[in-house]
Amino acid sequence: MAQRADEAVRGSKGEHDSERSRDRILAAALEEFASKGFEGTTTAEIARRAGVTQPLVHYHFESKDELWRTTVLHLLDAAEATFGGVLAELSDLDHLDKLKVLVRRLVYFSATHPEFGRILAYEGAKGGERLSWLLAQQPASEARLFVELLESAAQEGVLKPLPMAHVAACIGAASAYVFVIREMMRTVYGIDVDDPTVIDAHANTVVELFFHGMTVEDASARSGTKGAA
Image (cartoon, rainbow, N blue to C red):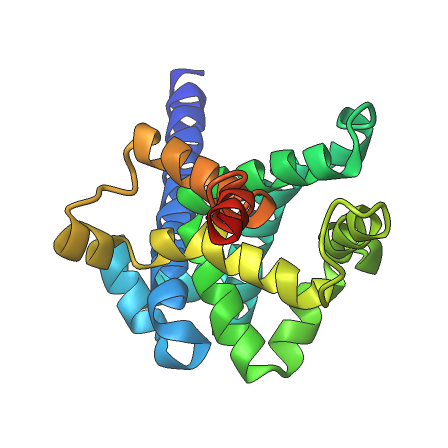
């Protein structure tokens, strides 16, 4: 009886250690894929970063491609937790206010998951099978949500009638980029983008720039008055 109990404990510990090693591999893979892209990443380097052997990486994941997809699925799960059901949650707001809330959420998501922007940049630039797979993981309606809200706001006359796919891409870049270049922000500007107050300030800045602009309110009117005088 005691022997069977000891074996059960060892088995439970082995499963726990296996799960922890798998988590370390996924965390290391996330850093590697985000910093080097799929082609520049090796399972040997992932193993080194995770502190495990390369055969253990292949024990948990049959191929580098499977490891990449599992890593990306974890990011997509995090995105779903942030944005899933957002329209129902914001149903009482007008289109412009919905956009402001979504932009703030995008900034906060980018701050906590900067790897997503890096991986998307790699695959978005290259195109191909992995990008197609990534985009297929969410309905097209969800992918177009932001553009559709921008277009609705433009139809209401509260936004300029610009090409909204371009506007959405600009907002996405503005929301995420400072977290992608975190070391440059620290070195050049002395800004720690992991600081919650900095994240809040960046969210406010992106909303202000895209939905209010940089011009001081009534500045053009004052300029016109001075000219007339």
